[in-house]
Length: 295
Image (cartoon, rainbow, N blue to C red; front, side, top):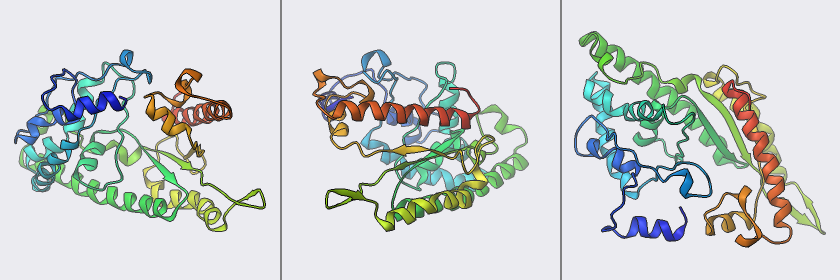
C-alpha cells in the first residue's frame, strides 16, 4: 500500500473509502452473527505495482479473536452456529473462487483462534523458516497444534451431523480440513555468515540447524504432505538476505522484481535484484509442482 496510503487509510478514522478490510468481512461475526459480509472491494491490482488484488488487514481484527474463541467452544459441542463461525474462511473462499485462481493468506506466527479459522478454509499451507532453533520449534508446534484441533473439529462435525442430520448441508462447511493433506513445503531464510580475515565463513551452529531441517520437516509435516509433496520437494528454496533491497522496496511500495533506478536502485543492488528474480522463479516453479500444476 505504501506508507502514505496506509497512514491515511488506517489513521484517519473519518476517511471514507470503499476498500474492504478483513475486519469488515468478519464484522457480522464480531456483532454476534454466524454470517460474514459478502461485500468485497479489495485494493485492485491496477492500483498497485505488485499487480495483485489486496484485502488489507486491520489492527482491529484482533477484536474478533474472542468471538472466534467462544465459537470454538460452541463448535466442540456440535453447535451449528459455532461450526459456521469457524468456517467463515470456507465461506469467504467460496465467495471469491470465481474471480481468483489462487488466494494467499499471510498469517502471523500465532497458534490462536484466528489462524485456526483461516486454516480451516484453506486448501494448502506453507511454512517460511529462518535458520534458527525457533523455526524448528515453531514447525513442531504447528504440527501438534494442527493435529490436535483438526481431530476435535472432525469429532464435532460428526456430533453435529448425528444430532442434526443434513443441517450442515445448507452451509459451506468443511467436514475435514483440506490442510490435513495440504502441506506444500517451506522456504529457508539464509543467515549472514561471519567474516574472518575478509573471508565469509559459515557458522557451525547454523549449519547444524540447516542440515537438520529436512528430517524435522519429514517428522513433523510428513503426515500433512500434499499428494505431490515429498521430503525432497518440500524445500521450495532459499531466500537470500537482501540487505538494503527490502527497505527500498517498502519505501516505494514496489515488489523487489520491479525496482528501478527511478526508485533509488543503485550499484550492486541491480545484481541482487537479478539474483532474487531467479530465486523466486525457482521457488514458484517448485510450489506449482507441489500443487500438481505446471509453472
